[in-house]
Image 1 (cartoon, rainbow, N blue to C red):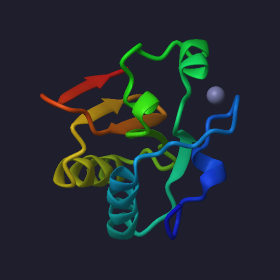
Image 2 (cartoon, rainbow, N blue to C red):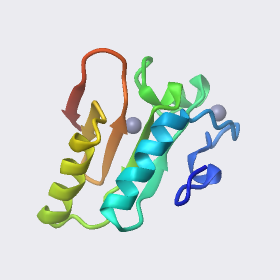
Image 3 (tube, protein in one colour):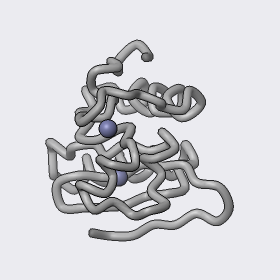
Image 4 (cartoon, rainbow, N blue to C red):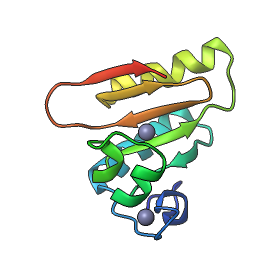
Length: 116
Ligand SMILES: [Zn+2]
Ligand SMILES: [Zn+2]
């Protein structure tokens, strides 16, 4: 889909649909370029069925193809800090910070960030 992200990484695992928003994908690629290291996608596009199966929020950014969950491989604080800074800088406004993964999303209206 972009230089560093393949469709196969982003498609819904249950039906192989991949309706990722291209503006979102461009932004993710910019983040990847600035980060300068591989970013592993845990979850990209989700169809309504799969979103239910993983207990995603009914209004999840994943349903619109405007979110990814990325694996945090390197949990040193400087790496976490860099990823967060980039996410804020690039104006991802749906940000979830989990133990082993981050949710990066774009949502209409007011932004939101949470820990999980
Ligand atoms: Zn599906
Ligand atoms: Zn997510």
